[in-house]
Image (tube, rainbow, N blue to C red; front, side, top):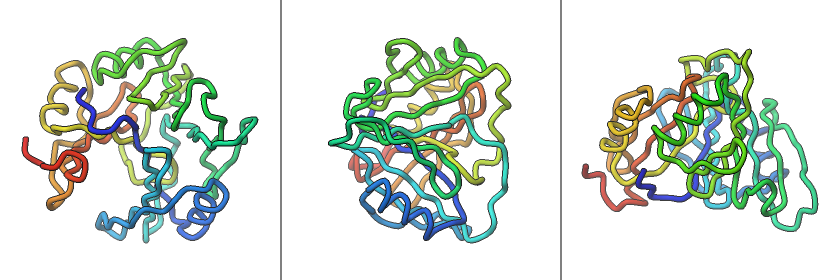
Length: 227
């Protein structure tokens, strides 16, 4: 995969705007970037996170309370820490602040629960063309994905707009080509490629457990939305 940025992003949905902003900005210490309007009463409050972006998607209308996705824990490097600090945000999302280099994390890490470790590794390494790391880790640029097998895991719901961590984003140069390549290599389609104005062309694919990955061609990074 031809990455336009060496860091994955992660998106969560919430109805608790002020509480979440206070937690992520003051407790975690993330820097606010800007607000994007996604339509349907959803505002995306973007925050810088060691090169990655945390997308806090605040929904005006009550969100569905569905089972969690497989994205279970976010690890964020904070310089100067001597040990891991385990926290929960106002919706109960797990986040660990970690020393630089902890478990190989230099920016962020994401713990992903999977029902079949072999199938998950095949998807992330073969279909997505990320890099196999030590143990059950996969490297997406410099983002470390920790695959944790749970044979009793329920599939991720088809409805993405629900409370909690719901998707990750990979920034690439050509959305249509990458989307088609992922499907050809065994990935599952989430949504077909589409364009938002002059800023982004994106699609979604899903892993064997249904977890959503946004495949994003952002003009700010690539200079164009041409395919």
